[in-house]
Image (cartoon, rainbow, N blue to C red):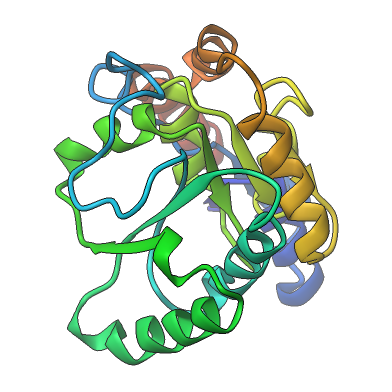
Length: 233
């Protein structure tokens, strides 16, 4: 018997806190639907429905809850207020998250960027590639991720990712080529990383897409089956 986890970090945590032996743990990453998540035209130029303001798009996709660290992204956006023209689109949340959304809106107002942030709520899964493709960069400011599926989806659509050092994103994101992983939780550091991609004349669409071609579900399913067989044997 054994355990299959999606990242090396999860393996380390099981060993550290649960006393699991490394021989009983296999790492099989998450996968991405490469047929659904692919660049859409015109990548980086389309203005998604519901977006306020103008400027290049910074995108967040995920739950609206404290572990996702949205305050870091909004503070980073505040650092960018006088440096670059941008709009921050936040996808996610439901009726239960409305108090959190209101708190983030108050923070944005305090930083003078309320008009540049749009909370779009839930978006159908099939529609996400359109938003990823329209963005100049996707931000992942989480305190914790078991893996980081959003990064795979964004990269598959040709959009770079700026992330905190969570999950296995250090292995997935190619530093300063397909994104950047920052250490710590400095708004200024995240702002600088985001700005470095906002200021590029062109997105590294092909490099981003190519970097995750090995994470298609057929390849991941085969790896998962192999790990199950190995653990059973």
